[in-house]
Length: 111
Image (cartoon, rainbow, N blue to C red; front, side, top):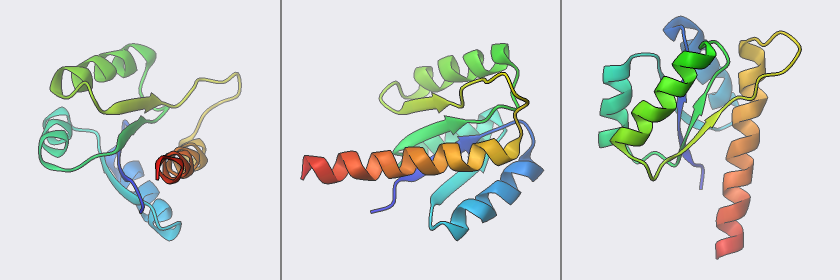
């Protein structure tokens, strides 16, 4: 079963495009850049894990991880790792896809 994933980023317009791309891979992703909406999603949706894109500055990423932890500390949060090369939205697509595959493999191993 496909995991339900919350993707968090800087620009909602970019996130909307990324969600369309993830859906082409069959991913079940909801995305937001609004703290109020993120809180609502975490409290009302069944989220398996959360990914944070590279568009947020480091301090905002750290604040977001803490914010999420205060809402629900049991949901795993995966900020995309920083690299030496310039990051773009295209890096977020394989990062989230790989995490979704790893999640499905772990679930299959538990059965």
